[in-house]
View 1 (cartoon, rainbow, N blue to C red):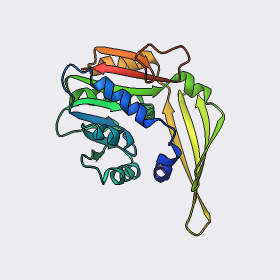
View 2: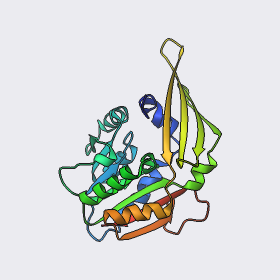
View 3: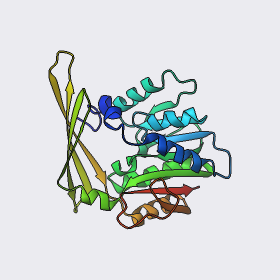
View 4: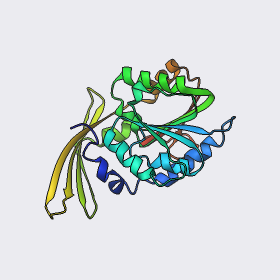
Length: 246
């Protein structure tokens, strides 16, 4: 079973504390500082579309893309009653292909970490650069190597009234990947519990590696900040945000 096939239906409930509204507001302020008006925004690895919908509510025309059909199904249902719904596309990040250029691109909640191969992250950055208009911003966040290493041999649990999720995490210095082994239990209508299992992997990309890949793609203006801040990150920070301009 691929990542998020089973978890998609329960993802939003389990991630209720992810502070999506605060993140969307931060992105809105960043996009407002663009030298040219931002009307169209690409949400790369949009998942269930929460950020896409929040930005669409602020007036942007949003394109959300994700490789998971299950996550996109949840996104489409979430946006069904909106006056200005995002357009959701079934595409993997490294195969991004749009009908037109966009004014800005974003990627949130460590979607970029799911690109575990160098050729895939290089190709993704090249394609984002290709579809950005000149002067456009590319803003993305990543889990830091410090955070992913600290997750080695940890166990986390999340629960709601209808679901219970257990995450076991293991970090490999050889592959620089953190593997999440996910057991998801969901309450069925007959009162019995149904179990699903998934594995997720996130790559610990260093600041130096990401800067090299971005430069190769064509980005010459790159700034690194702390999460949801405009200052430089502290040592040992768990999340970075990269601000790039084409």
